[in-house]
Length: 235
Image (tube, rainbow, N blue to C red; front, top):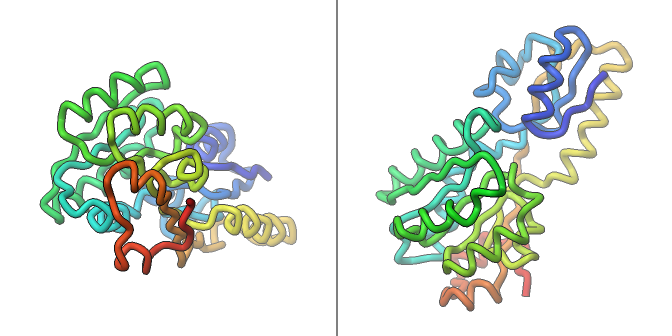
């Protein structure tokens, strides 16, 4: 069995085998990425958990609108499709949500960390007041937050640790719980279950974290509407 963490690892595992069971622990957009035939009947050797990270565009846009009352333009920092194809559903969902809210979107697709400075310069020139960052760039969060704050662009991440490092907000599934629950799939498959018929599960609750110090530095206030949505306020 192979337990694969996040979309690139699942894709690599699928390229290596069509028979060994693969447990997503978790992966983003498994249906859109072609990993499974359906959530209820995966149909192949892949099953496990979806983090729904590409399906949260509406929630992320709404939270940013509540945090930034005059929000008009949202940046998106994502990978090129060749670097990680997950960027396509991730960006598309944000664009759809922003369009429905009459907001402009400034997506910048990059291949790696050497392009961070240029990416934020492009978004700043385009008038982006906030940026939603793909989880792929989580390991670079400290550096990215510094660049975002330098440009006074509110940083939104799927990673709580980025908020602890000075980002404005994060919204995501409870990843530690997903990691734990992946063991349930491992146990079932080791006991003989067929991954093709083990339904892929999605999170039902999402965690929202906001950094109040960063909000203050950006001239934003945490309204009762925002506080009603937040699970954790980092001081």
